[in-house]
Length: 319
Image (cartoon, rainbow, N blue to C red; front, top):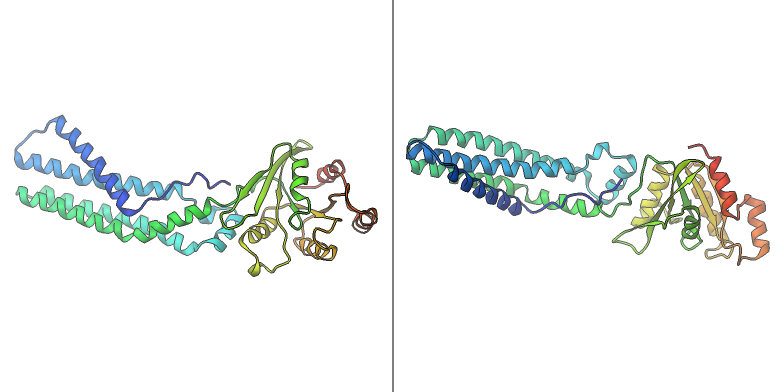
């Protein structure tokens, strides 16, 4: 799922200004079309067109926000959980609800002032009703100012979410940073891995795709940590959620050159197994590692040391 295309949400004044600008254009066209009847009827026609046009333009602008913003309850579980740790879901729903309220309130105001203008017999009163309507309309849109601001904040945050295809068979490549996960991903996937970077960290989630046994498989290089969830940084939390909700299987990468101590790597491996996903063990950097350490991992964990054998293991997975 990709949130890059979410439409920018402007401030309250912007939407009101756009609606008024479009209304003025409509009035110019309306005058050119010509009007019949006496002065009162002409005045009514012009002022009715003004209030109807502004209400419609504002309604369309606000409605666009509602239909472009994703429905939280229909999102895949991974993204719902991600939203719950990065945003206030209750406030998002409240803010979207405030936009619906604004649309409905403006519609009520339109009906009221349309009635008042139609029943008026004085031009000054007609103009007064139009001014009152614009004032009330301005008040309603400004009442949702903070809600629009929060939705824009949420949009910016969601643009940073990794573009993971939750419907594809997915294999997570797990292990500590710098143990060779990205190198392995590059060997498994023909294309250059897509790097989903985050503004709040220098790390990222790498995503790649490959056809294995006539099946498209998504691979995720996710950073590992021994920290409890509440102690993890944001990228580590995203990785934990991806492992839990997206991954169907795991390739755990051991580094025999001990970029991280073997004891810590084993501890992370045991923690990864708790995900209850099938785990394949891969041994990286075997070209520079000591032979006795390579043999240790091959004997104790049946570690795979080349990508061809690894692909065969992946072929045997049931997605």
